[in-house]
Image (cartoon, rainbow, N blue to C red):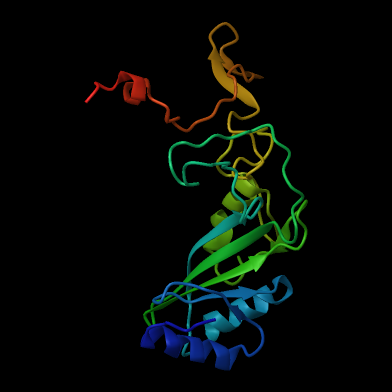
Length: 231
């Protein structure tokens, strides 16, 4: 990997390499950022070193987030006369997905050292694509408690050793994990208040799936050659 890092990031990378030789894989990041991949079986060991080493001292976990790599690197947009990022796109929501290859889910950890005024990001992938499981870091950073519950709720990632792994954002009895890329955009059920029953009721979804991107008409009759005034 080409190292275009700032001097501060280069110095931090040297410290990390000295404390954790061979246990982290540096991955591409912006010049003023530092990101590593860690094997899931070494996650807790690495996190303890990052927290306790005097010249690292990452005592704060700012954020923890789940990642779903389903369809990563492949485009769902089939375009001919326009780019894959333009407006003239169409999506076939009913098309079969290609089988996922490798670790589908991962967890990203954003770390901060108040002592040394430095930041670091590490990422660990869950080995099982169907039932993603990874070690909890609540015992290392207690603030991870609700973050891990959120990742469990939205992505279905299980955290081994978490003291109270329950849903935190979705409703009681919610089915599925809404941030997974294969979760239907219209959801599975509708929720409304029933005045007769005087309670909230769940019903099947009544709306139809539709493409949520604008469509540009390329062949506009206003510019047809037959409509041009003769010269």
